[in-house]
Structures are given as structure tokens and as C-alpha cells.
Amino acid sequence: MEPMVVILVSCLLLGSIVGILAGMLGIGGGLIIVPALSYLLVHFLGMTTEAVMPVAIATSLSTIIFTGMSSAFAHYRLGNIQPNVVLYTGMGIAVGAVGGAQIASHISGEMLKDVFAVLVMLIAAQMIFGKQKASDNEASKATLGAVGTVAGTLSALMGIGGGALLVPALVWFKVNIRAAIGCAAFCGLVIAVFGTASFIIAGLNETDVPNHSLGYVYLPATAGIVATSMFTANIGAKLGQKVNVRVLKSMLACLLVLVSIRMILGIE
Image (cartoon, rainbow, N blue to C red; front, side, top):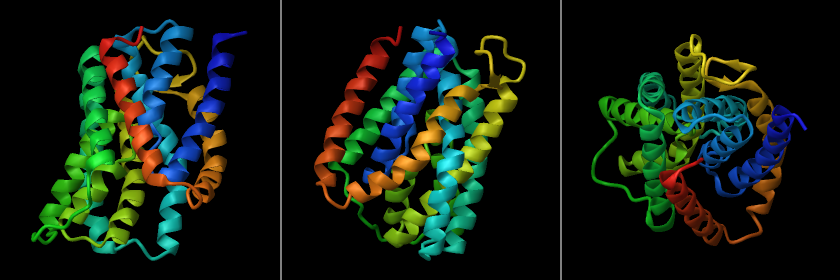
């Protein structure tokens, strides 16, 4: 079987898993897509670690454009989008997403792999031990912009939607939890659009990318993941009402730590 066909079929399965977990736990798929896609591209297309990380991260961000649209629209209908919070956080997000993508495309693949792994471990720790607490600090326009810039930069570096970073940060600055989740949903779309565009531009003249790529975005993988994740997210949302989400989050966090350790030791 052709390597591209194997990757496409694998990405259809990956999208199914990502959609269910995203629906159940409210996490972005990038935490799972990036390491899984890195493995597939290294082992079936023969890419090196140096070359594979920008492609995996850019492709992950491209899938969030499609899943993020439905999520943002759903929160808009629920009234969870507060214009002032979204406006100033979104402006920071856009700047950070472009900058993060440029950083990711200009540092070594080995360093990017290690940065991703360490940040995933921190997010996993937050998933297990973190509690969403409010401080005594109000969210000013400058604060919202700064939070957005930092979250956008880190999210573009990791190929994630940023909800795991944005929600606790906004709640800390006394933003209502529903508004924080709605803002994270909308800003995940902003991160994906600006981050993907930046990765496409940065990778246009690169030769060490797979065939059928647009810049750093590997289109067959994007198509496979999106084709199934858009449908299974609804299934995951329904399952999330029937299972112990806290236990599942802890199990997933432990899995992410193991995956991160494996990435640090080497993908190849």
C-alpha cells in the first residue's frame, strides 16, 4: 500500500479519536495530533525529526480551523462570547499566533520537539492538579491582550487551539468561566487561521516537506483528520455526559506525559 494512503487512512482513524476526546473532555486535538502525525510521517514518509515537527504542528493547526468554526459558532449561539473579552484577547492571539509559527519554523526540529514535549507535560499537570481560581486582579484591555499574545505564541508553537492555556488564565483575571470558555473557542479559531497562514508562508520555499503540502501543511493528513473529527466530536459530547470526565482527563494526562517522554527520547 502506498505510504500516503496508509497515512490518510491512519489520519481518518486519528480524527475519530481526536473528535471523541475533544467532545468528551473539551481538549484541543493538537496534543494528540502532533505526536501521532510526527510518528506517521517519520515512519512512512521517511522524514527526519528535524523536518517533521513544523509539518506536524502546522497540519494540526490547519485541522483546528474547521473544528474551531463549529465550536465558536456553538458558543456564540449560547451567548458565551463577550465582545470586549474576545476583541482584546483575539488581537493578542493573532499577533502571538503569527509570531509563534515563525519561531517554530526557524528553530531546529530537535529543539521544537523538546519544547513541545515539555509544554505538553505542563498542560498534563494542569489537567490533573490545576484548579480554575480567580485572583483579585481585573482583566484590563492590556491584560487581555497580553494573555492572548502569550497563549497565541505557545499555541502556535504546539499546534493546539489554546483552550488549556486560555481558560485558566482568563478565569484567574476574573473573567466568567462561561465567557472564558467561549473566548477560548473563538480564539482557537483565530490561532488556527493566523498560525496556519504563517506556517504556509514560512514553508512555501522549503524543499524538505512531503509532496501534496501547502507550505508546511500536509494536506492529505488535514483532510483525513477533519473528515472524521467533525462528526465524532458530537458523539464525544454525548458520551461526556455519561462518564466520569475527571478520571478520563487524568488518564489522558498520564498518556500525554508518556508520549512526551518518548518524544524527548526520540521519534525515530
